[in-house]
Length: 633
Image (cartoon, rainbow, N blue to C red; front, top):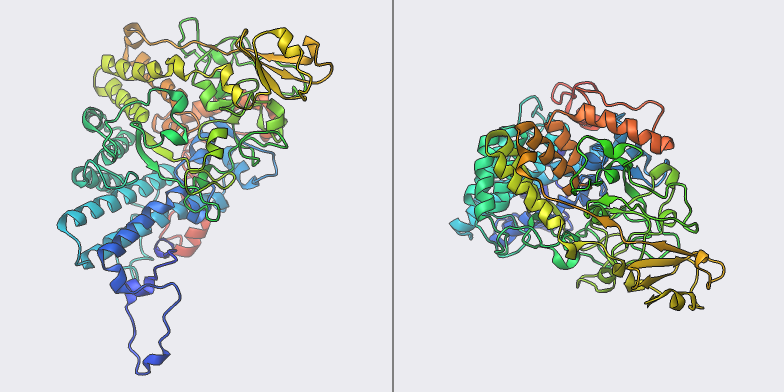
């Protein structure tokens, strides 16, 4: 495949790597290409290590987008899975509209971006593996390690391609880049190849590494288990997950575990914690955003003169359905019968209520993870103050009342630079491609299918117990960072004479936040009170896991809640073979909430929409006799 091998390194030339140099009698006419390095420079330990870093560097998708080529999969896994809608307004980034409505055409530019961004990573991994045998100043141990890292990364990029496109050509370092590149069809299944790459890495990589961002044995094991799970090889996956859970550790030597507080899990100060199995290592830079967390740079509240994170761009708005999924019953358990979508149980919202009008937040029981996943009016948005609702949303009638919250940066993080700086929207916060909670829930799936229901219960309750840690609950005091004042009684609040509309005070006597809406400051009717949300989360009992069907439903719903907005949902629905029913039900509910967001008829077409079309540009480049289009397109 010609495109697969088109190298985009600024410091490497394919000609230098594979074609060699041409002798000339008049050597003074030979002018080196600007930015090109010699084969001698590449065939050294330093050179091949540099190439390996280049393989890691495209995980954020920057090389081909950057918005939809990276591993966060917020469009491909979360929006298509019903976690969220596109957000912003109908005209902004309109190439996303048909994707979330399952009207994707092979000519869609975002589809091409995901394909090319992933194959860029494959090409770079293959270059490392092709050049490594030519390197002479490298030890056997380093050869094994570099091979393991390159194969892990190739496995990662191919996993992205297989779960997204299904029909994918397998190209490795053994193929001739000049003659084989145009004759690789996509008619053969590649799961075994991906599995082999991760297995090699699992069996050969060291447990710890010299640099925290590198893949290690246990990250490879976690991904191997995931690939096995995607093939329904539950027994094999269980064996690997058992090993990872019992013995796994991070690259920097921390035994895998859940971070104590869900509240702190996605913060810059806690990155590379015991929960981070494998993460894209982001850096912020004032002049260069290539290594920042660019994949999520558009997904902040749409601020227009209101203090908050971002200032751009208002994408990726959590859905009504996802928000209401966090409703819990009197025992703190989710409403697995779907009744969270009924009028009696669905989450109260400020849809159509202006930020200058009074609004009281929902007072029913909710899972505390709701307010670390989704921004909603009246609840502290990290340390920026109470979410103001419409003022942070570009077009609420189109996007709905919620904003994304995971991986949003706090005010404290934005003012205390990480050393390399920040660019607005481009943060230095790592994105965890896999975290330990994901491993536990995948292991729980395996236990449900081929193991012990009691063990599955144990794993799920570990996740829920962490969420129940009150130290991680959102509190009114979280609003204090930018509050006008903190007072202990009503009289002190009403005596504040300098406060302006939409500023807030903390009432310690009521554990609540009061926002001044305007009018006479000394009258309580001029203020809006936001009370503390009612958090209620409980553990499951053995009776809840008494049958395989019960256990399966609970494990799957726990994945929905725990991994919401992390690019997982759609791929889970496909591998469980429930995607048609779930997405149909999602559209039936969501279109009633924001009808202007969706076309008159929107439907999921079974047998087609489980996968994206092969980009037409690639078929045109390779030939339709080489690349076959997916069914239905």
